[in-house]
Image (cartoon, rainbow, N blue to C red; front, top):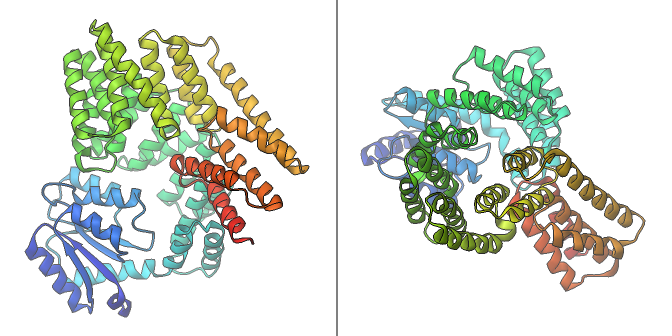
Length: 537
């Protein structure tokens, strides 16, 4: 056992006190001193929020509350652990459903009880040796210093260590996140020349998708599934690619196959439900949303839209009253949540209208409008689509059209979302040529952005500020416009000095983008620019 283990922080998560004691004794025999132990998922999350753990040994079945899979999905989603941390899933169960669910969230290792001290030692030593030199790179990524992380990755790759593929894979993933799809494709291609590795094939498919080479991406994902019908990520990407190719029925079948293999992934169940609902297959939608709600009771991916969509499906497969019962469950599950109240109100409006209760339907819709306005830029883009559908159902076609036009303005650079807007415009009969309408709006925004940037380049910062100030008022949810406005305002203050009013506006613009997309690379650059401005450097 490597001597470094003595300095590491361990967390044991197991609902049985005797098992916690056995694991503690094993670790102490290796020289480990820093050991915390908890009995359930709630305590585990609290500990991981408060302290950085190098190794987490977590039982899969923890009784009531979160299970091991849900702990792993939450700490990954919330970035409570990094790439150098080790998560080992431990369980006495070996059913296919459980194994597929646990493995899909990619713990670093998987141990089935009973196991010996020697097996645990071997497993930990291998994992620690593999991850030891990722810590410095992880710190750079955590601090959003991606250029530094890439420099360190290049250095380690050039040294050709035994675990070189760890560094190559991480570098390629950073390229995908940054939208550098050509670079990612080149990295994955180099790997595949040496050896046929599944993660590299999946990665090159993602790069093709990012470059809108959908037919190539589809072939890659289909090929992966021919070799391994339980490669779950390939199903998700294949379905996503089929949607981009306007093959929604085929995409639904792919997700149905995926959930048959691994039923415990709430995100996939939700995606299947939404796709089935849009394909007017309410029976499949009802089952998928019911599964997602059951799985989501203790999950970070629990969401009010799942309940709202189940209510719509139930209203069709059973009756309106069944749908209203689901909405009552929604209110209980998300008490005091404004977004949940909005989903409930706009869904109830449609159900009540279908049931012939026009007055109640109008009351619900008025409430939905007020809640939507109150949420402002905090409303997810998809909410605009749901609101537009509800408005159309209630006869508010002009408002539905306005909502969808604003959705385009706020998300003009998101091609996947714009495709959904176009489909919604067509489905609701609100445009004879949705693609032309969306293209015209996009052209106007691009011209505006280019005009503002050109004004700034020739030193006309005051004119540029006025232009972007007006643009942000008209498109408060547009990330590109908010970031350009923040940049122009900061350039002006660098030239003329700090203006408290302008400084507040910059902070507001950056806060909006952070709420919408905390991983946005340009946002991180603008945040560094603001720090430099305030420090006078």
